[in-house]
Amino acid sequence: MTSGKPTPESLPKEPLPRLLAVMAWLRDRQHGCPWDIDQTFRTIAPYTIEEAYEVADAIERDDMPALKEELGDLLLQVVYHSQIASEAKSFAFDDVAAAIADKMVDRHPHVFGDMDIKTADAQTVSWEARKAAERAAKGATEGAPGALDGVARALPALMRAEKIQKRAARVGFDWATIGPVIDKIEEELRELRVELEAETIEQEKVSGELGDVLFAVANLARHCKVDPEVALRATNDKFEKRFRHIERRLAESGRKPSEASLEEMEALWEEAKTRV
Image 1 (cartoon, rainbow, N blue to C red):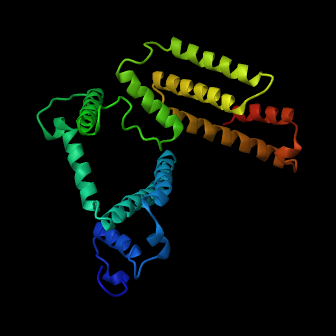
Image 2: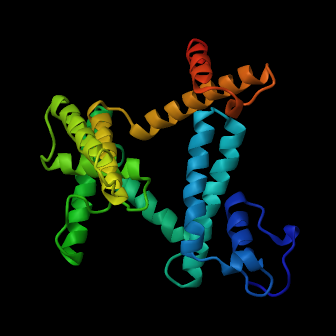
């Protein structure tokens, strides 16, 4: 950085160079922000994940002003990580941009080359094949590649379950029809019931069996070609709307849910189902 405290007028006018300069100044040891200076890859990683979810939320709500703002917040996270890496002389923002541009060119040979790909499904097959080739090449230098390599552990558990199931399916570890998938859910539910009905309930075993149930349900969603995260978000929203209906109806008589019987709330729930 140059000497002297920055001013808005001293920053570049072009949007991206301006953003990069802002982040560099925020991390400047002499003139920067103490909080920004203290951050590391690990401390800001949760914010990166949070911003990605807020982008998805704005899209779900079809809120374009919010989407513009949330995309900016997400871009800031990329710039933030790149600035920290630049200070460590690991890589810079330009390296990040160049690497993803090169990857997109390589994975779209039907656009930037001579390959003939007519449909989105065919492109998906080509994309996955190239990703597998990249993993194999990486494995040649880092050890034998595995089918589940590259599935991030930090993903939400439901999303990660679906991704590792897809990877296993690619090498043939999968049922051909939905019937056995449903049978597996029923099997896991029976095993959970056994633990719940045991004379002494062991929470660790209950947690393990419940995890098996959720994993099997995620597998069913995959076989049904349903994104389990999207499906569960929709159900969460539906539950919230119906429960708020219960709260509104009880408020009409000056009461709260805690002051109503379960039977009364269930009746209002059924009423909400006809409206929401």
